[in-house]
Image (tube, rainbow, N blue to C red; front, side, top):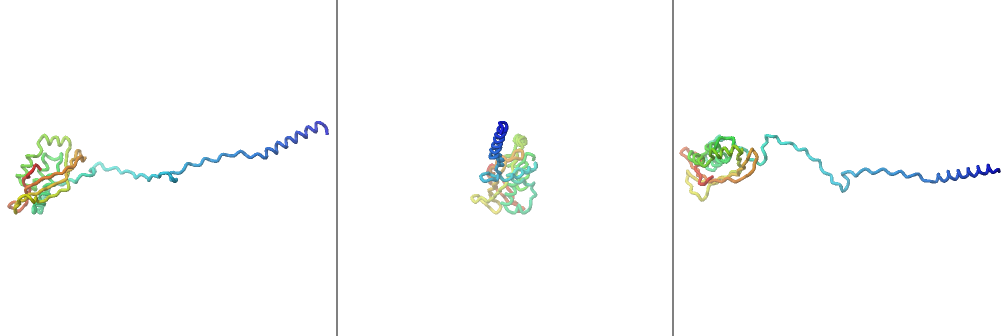
Length: 207
């Protein structure tokens, strides 16, 4: 074998060994994909319930917590057959006030169940022109409920005269929004006239 042939043979053997060595190498590992984030329903995660849509309140809907307004009196004959019944009807009108009414509008309405003398006395203690104007400026009103009446057990009584303790829960409003609720309590003399009707008469307190 010539020297050139020997060199070619050694070169071929070296190349074969190199190729064989490469065949034993492992392919490079491909990174595994990143797992997706855990669902909000996975254990340990707080799942909030869906939020219900809020339905807006109509603009002319009265705020909650306000007693219903009473209508102007349409006296029923039955209201005058009992001192407690007539005093309750009187208080429903007397207790409710409104800046949109005329001055002492509550006393005008309540007069349907009262004697003229009682209405005159209440008007004397009622709104003045100044206080009425303040009422209108501040848009003040009152609404009442929980009206209760009972005959005073300590006061004198006759077949035509009793004293009635009457109370109500009065909610005060400004611009139709309630801001305070206070009790209103009064003791009234209730008398039966010649026509047999019971009427609310003068009070024995400031009412």
